[in-house]
Length: 316
Ligand code: ADP
Ligand code: MG
Image (cartoon, rainbow, N blue to C red; front, top):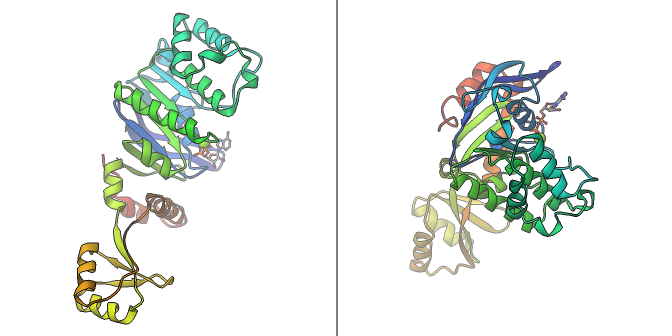
């Protein structure tokens, strides 16, 4: 469990992280979502004690990072994937890490196997692709067999196979009962990985809710229709009390209706349909709306924002 209480970081005038309070629980993948510059990396650095909070507090299983006796056994992190020690082989890089942290060297073989680098373990890391470097970074995070794992934008720059692998790994780690905290600026990525979502914008908490709740609140669907008999169909739909929006491309969208109902209405009136489909509002759009409003809110007063975000989004 990671617990943040009023966590704040200022760099001069800039408030990078602004009074963040939330908890990251074990057994699930918690997605940490926000646009670039929202404060995700700064928050993660403070969790690891690499940056000192201006105000507030962050605890790992009730302790500050520097109070942990064997920190690598508590929490493993992948922060900057490019920070690979070029001259060493993957094996030696991990062995040095293990020795410096009192971790048995057999763990090096285990984690190399977990991340699929056994075959290239003796190769110099500087020759590694981005994906292999990422796997090596993750091997380092797993070395101490920690109960808590934190990954900062782990899929950035990876190919689809690498992205799929990381996604599966995070779910597996969570299923083992570990706490998995992963950041991204892409809603689409979180939708496939995270069980729980913490959304920030401009350093502030915008949402703290389960992925299922986020989807339920944002999965407004509508029915899209195209027909060569526009006027007749419009009359029929209006007659049935439905709200119709013209989308500009010769199609209509009908809110709060099932495609079956519209298909039956069209059949009753012998109207030809060229398209009848259900459209799902994208989660990416919902995320953009949420964070765009955070930017707007910044220009207005705090109290207005307090009301705006009062209870709707901050729900466990
Ligand atoms: P994210 O990881 O969500 O993209 P960051 O935590 O990297 O966001 O940055 C949050 C904000 O804090 C940004 O505006 C960034 O420019 C600023 N920032 C981050 N680190 C520093 C620093 N060392 N000095 C000054 N400003 C910083
Ligand atoms: Mg970042």
